Length: 233
Image (cartoon, rainbow, N blue to C red):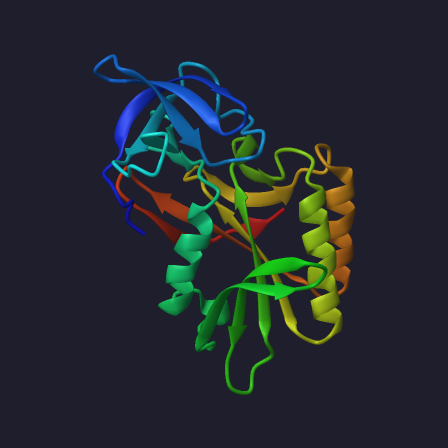
């Protein structure tokens, strides 16, 4: 998936009100950027962090920049826009690039299911059980090489796990898909110390037959695409 507009480098001044960030472009211009991430962004939002933002000239948008990447300065990036994983996975599913789902012909985004919820993707194919896929963006890394989810307490995440468990009990395929928006991790784990309730829901979902998959991403200042399958810790 290519970014719609070429990204430009900037420096983070501060992130506030969850969805706003003051930034300084390389020419010294200061601006406010939209931060499409409701999480804590632990370890990613320190003042002075090198970032990449996407300009826009849409008159309907109040903010002229969107924060897309953190640049770790060693050739590694983290994607901070939680909307990008769904776009990248949709493209990969339609292209048959995820082996676990390559037999499915129909990819339906944002389908109603469960208790007033929507599943990120519903897959259908002749002779195959319906596959319900819930996507989670993973950006937390506290131990080198290990990505963790969640980065803050998420009652919504626990609810999604319970609803996936119900789908699995009804003999559908139910899949929790962790998409790691980092290029520096090779393993994924649940951050039980951050949200013990989520960790319990995760364990229960596995017992009911929910599949857990994790993939990393290949990220540059121009593209973000799904990469290789990662191990679960």
